[in-house]
Structure formats: C-alpha cells, structure tokens
Image (cartoon, rainbow, N blue to C red):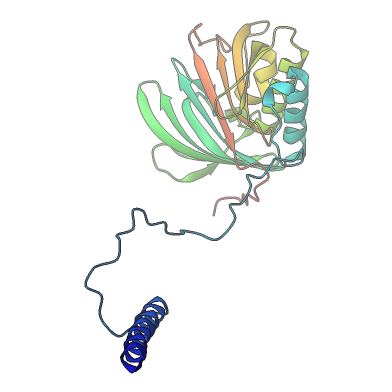
Length: 270
C-alpha cells in the first residue's frame, strides 16, 4: 500500500506546483522575462484638446450694421445738410480740369486748398497770370484780406476794390450744394462698394456763388456728391459745366472736404 500512497503523493505534489505556477503567471508575479513580444496595437488615438468649442456668436439687432440701401435720397441729403450746418470748420481743396476759377484781382486759380472756420479763411493756391504760373497764399479775417505778392512773396493787405476772396465761403457753398440736390426731382443715388453714397443731379450756377464768386446766371451743370456712409459728411463734390464766363462745357471742378469741426487757428500775417 505504501508505494501507491507515495505515487499519489508525488502526483498530487506535481499537480499542486503546476497550479501555483499558473496562478503566479496570471498575477504577473513571475520574474521570468517573456520570450515573445506583446501584440502591436493597430491604432493610437491622442486627445488634442479637452475644451469645448465656443459657439459662433449670433449678431444682435444693436450690433448689426444697417443696410445702406434702406435710406432714401431725402434722408441721406437731410443728414448731410445737418452735418454741414453743425460744423464750424473744415479743410477743403478745389481742383480744376479744363478750366480755372477767377478771383483775387484776376488770378486764374487752378488749385485752392485751405482751412475755414466761422470767421476766418486761409488758403494756398496755384494760379496763373496769363501764361505765368504763380503760387499765392491768402488770409481772410472778418472783412480784412491779405495776400502774398506773387513776385516777391511778401504779404500785402488787399483793398476791397482789388477783388477780395470774401465770396469764398466753402461751408455755405456745400450747404447750398446739398440744398440744391434736395430740391431737385432728378436726384439719383447709388451705394458705393465702401458704403458711401453717390448722389447726382443737375445744379444751377447760382447755387455755386459762395464757391466761385461771379457765375453765369441761369446755367445748369452736372453735379455729383459723395457722402460718408456712417457720418454723412460730404466727402467730395464734382461740378461739370460752364459755370463762369470763361468756362467750357467740359470744365470740371472737384471739391474735396475733410477734418470737419477741427480747431483751426487763423491769424493775420506777421
């Protein structure tokens, strides 16, 4: 009986050892290095962000820009007129194509630019005396006018009989220009790519007296004004036609306007 019991003991002991090895292997406590590599993963996912994307903001009525086409011609022109009425000063530049404006005792002004406020005016001008090109500077304060001598550059006070520049009132001129467009039944409008408004209509020569001085009475020309789409300031005006006696039908005057309401200080020359 003893050999049988011994054989059973040996078999039992061997089975017990195999079971313990299996348990240790499953628990990862076997120190033996495996001879085969683990399977290679087929795909790897890497998280790039844990934040939630922000939703696209929805415009509110207060933040949306009004469609410029919603405004009528009268609304645009009335707002432009209010801007001109409320400003006390601005910078301007008057240029010519195929002509000039005559002033200052016979000077043929081709380019005039300067500043104007409620009581004063200062200009720099390019002009001609016959075929001679000259540059002059002029200052008007109340009823007094000074101009530089085209030959010497020295300041001289002008006599009223010599032809003052007191007729040149750019703020009044642009206000009358806009009023003419308001009164016209033929005014057309288009919205430019930048949102500004372009308005065009025939214009009477008499409405330009504050810009040109003497004009041909009863003459009509073609006028166009560009008005800022947000501020309603008049940016520029173009007038084509024989507004003065020496003009031709192709004479074009281009008026540019900027710096509304700026504090220009204009003083008598030293």
